[in-house]
Image (cartoon, rainbow, N blue to C red; front, side, top):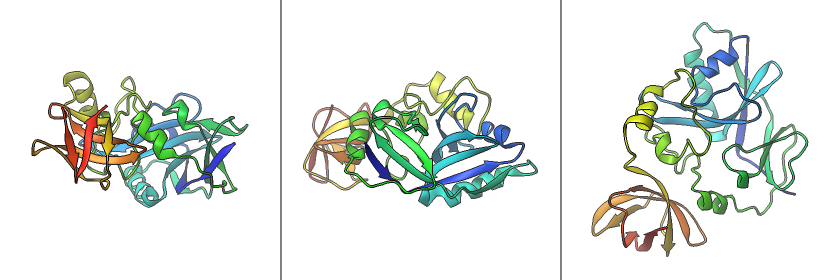
Length: 247
């Protein structure tokens, strides 16, 4: 079994109003079973946080990147008002891996190839799983890389195919903008897989014939994730000397 410890924090959301509180905020529907991938947006529909949500007994666990956990807790507290909701660090560790699903594990809802996640008092063992290669293969965005705070629109980075948004649920923060993008516009920009010869840093601008096309992000084994303006992403492109072509 390939397993890895992670740089994640698990917040614990309790109180009698916890379900309604979260349901009214996040992009996904919490009525299903198992692990739920979701996000919290600005009122203008831009990305702030992405996380996994799990119901356990009388509380909810929120699995979020550690360097975003304090800001998430602060944001949730801002929305709490008079609701009976508690927000605290659960003290649990996040373990993830590939192979057989552990008895107390949960499948990653974003994609089958991302394996499973497990919440435990024990720290997992580091392995040589190349998670970036898996993400690049399936064009899966990562917190702080392709997912940019107060800038990213979740539909442009594939949240619908990653099971991270539900358009049938009621209102949530930023819902109006997301729904409008879904139903009334054709996406002109978004994530795409590209081939890369050479290398360039994350965040390097991509150009074609001297015109800006997009931004280069995660790279692995000659492939990469890029954020592109689709009408310009044609033919040969470059990013700080690296040759880029659309796959």
